[in-house]
Image (cartoon, rainbow, N blue to C red):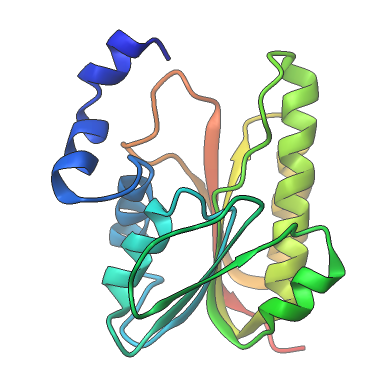
Amino acid sequence: MRLSEAKRDHYRKLARKQGFRSRAAYKLLQLNKKYNFLAEGNRVLDLGASPGGWSQAASDAIGEKGFVMAVDLRPVNVNRQNIGAIKGNVFDDKTLLDIGDGFDVVLSDMAPHMTGVWEHDQMRQENLARRASEIALRTLKPGGSFICKVFDGEGIVELVRDLRKGFDFVNMTKPKASRRESSELYVVCKGRHVN
């Protein structure tokens, strides 16, 4: 996106006005309004949390009795009582040990550094989504929810099919706050099956 377009971006302006660290917060707010997966007192795991917009939005939704664990390769500096942060790689087993389990909701807005080669970027995004789904299935409480960014492409059908084995409800959606030209979609999964 060009700087001139970014300056005109409605959600970017709104984020600045309302104190969110990124326009992405509105994607999560819109998804939650439609699918109602965040509740007062929830424990939330936010994968790929930097710069912290999703963590802030989740923090507001779950209130002071809830807790958000924000995880990213880069530091997440959101100064709120109910947000903790881990600087780590989701592909590193040590990071998974630090994360723990027993979450009500797992969020993933992770995205690769874009190369501009669509097939390569789509494959890297699919790998991130697969890893996020593995972590969600490992760390969620029974009945929990998983929300994950994907790029529209070949591997999505198989990923959704696999997720249907672990959740009662799985749906693909694109919130209004996503840029129209973006290929990003979100998989919303609710009702984690009991193992």
